[in-house]
Image (cartoon, rainbow, N blue to C red; front, side, top):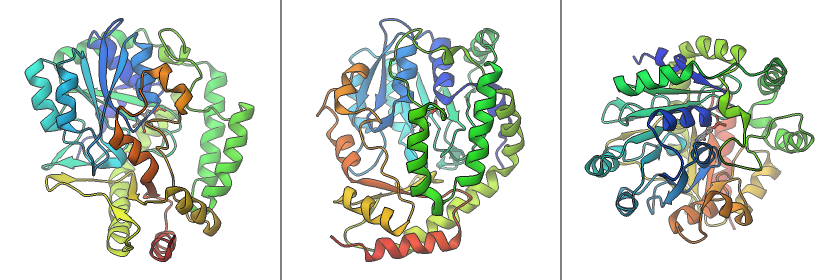
Length: 369
Ligand SMILES: *Cc1c(COP(=O)(O)O)cnc(C)c1O
């Protein structure tokens, strides 16, 4: 049984702030370059840019959704200062292979565990392979506490630096706490597969009005967002402390629902993502490939089946015209771009009932072009 208490030690406003704190503690700053996979969300490059450094995008495996260890070798020799390894959807990346390469170049590996709490590699939890790991607790993550993130490390020196810097992080203003509480309440009420398509439409409208915080900013860079100075909101941190006890039940539920998806879904138009023999994924969402993602999502909306289309772009949700701002070059990571056009995902969270899972399986098995 895993001890999750370290998750409550260094807590920040969001997962990206935890990553920023790790980068700072590692001495990554202006002029440095940081490796990360394409097929990620804006939170990751945003943290790197906030630290004054620049992202270097590395392609994913041709059949998987995680960083390709062989593609990262080239990036290593191009002088990156750190590398972020993401365990996408809870499917573990080959962090040991990447670390072997990084180790030869003296480059620290940071694990992005925002989708993975109890995912394991050879019997050991992800987040414990790199020098540090970070987590996020907002909607859609395996553990929801409202908004927040945390940083973990087993490195004594890095831990001391994180502790020293942590004193400089301040509590967010009460107005922000109030907004997050209201959003958490809405999540409690509406976060379930049967409401998925309806709330998507409503939330889209809310974020346009500013009532719900959109999780990406229009500008990135050093000093662009005050959020990088904040600790986790107090009410969210209390929820996180209480929610730790729920993690094993969440894992068991995800495993049960995923077993149904794996066993039940068999359609030549829908592909499962291969799982390496050393990997024990606990899925935050269950990914599938389809040659016609758009049509699949359209049909799912009509049938009211929760299927998500993210990541829709290599740096979600940035449109191609915005890629330049984070340094992503179109065509540079073809596997990631193909995943954006093919991969959809099913929910695995606690609100997914057996009936929801059965409905999703039936829908996918009868889907045709
Ligand atoms: C959610 C997420 C983050 C961090 O998100 P925050 O909104 O900053 O908490 C980072 N990486 C990945 C892959 C994520 O899904």
